[in-house]
Image 1 (tube, rainbow, N blue to C red):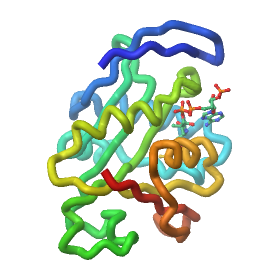
Image 2 (image 1 turned 180 degrees about the horizontal axis):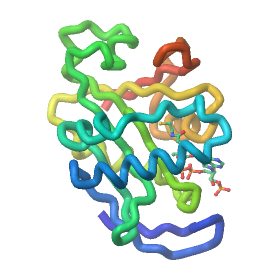
Image 3 (image 1 turned 45 degrees about the vertical axis):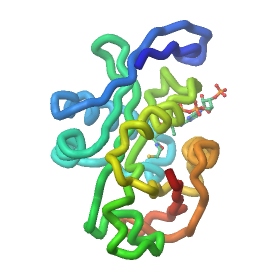
Length: 180
Ligand SMILES: CC(C)(COP(=O)(O)OP(=O)(O)OC[C@H]1O[C@@H](n2cnc3c(N)ncnc32)[C@H](O)[C@@H]1OP(=O)(O)O)[C@@H](O)C(=O)NCCC(=O)NCCS
């Protein structure tokens, strides 16, 4: 899917980029972008980074979209199918275990600072919806209450706040859900 970025490094631009489904070959690029963005975050507790091993696993079995300018990855979105695992956000949303297979986790979204302001987090979710595995009825997500950019995007994309609780071993998070 082709897209035009209208802002690059905060300046007006018209940069053609491609949103595409990614696989294990993209793992190093995803991991490098995650680490670069995390290292520059003023509040690192708002994003819990993942290992290369886990990211490779998501790229192998889940739904991962990347935004590329040629060979450069500038943004990505990872959606996970956690099924019966305790990591399924459906578990925290009060969904009966028999229905967990029909729920997906909006796991992470990252946009390089150079490309921010193009609504890419929302556009990545929109691009993912038609690609969801058949049978998925809902998406769960977690967002730090302090992460205004991600929270605004999630609410604008139709997520609603279901709860506020500690997650990932002590991080304050809103738990959000969206029916699809
Ligand atoms: C959350 C995130 C993905 C949003 O990026 P995005 O889709 O480009 O954001 P938007 O296009 O909605 O940006 C809207 C405005 O907020 C600004 N903005 C977005 N994220 C920002 C940030 N982290 N810091 C400062 N300003 C930010 C944009 O520049 C834009 O400003 P403008 O209206 O003056 O142009 C991005 O901030 C990010 O990668 N954050 C770090 C990782 C993270 O927290 N991910 C979410 C949890 S998984």
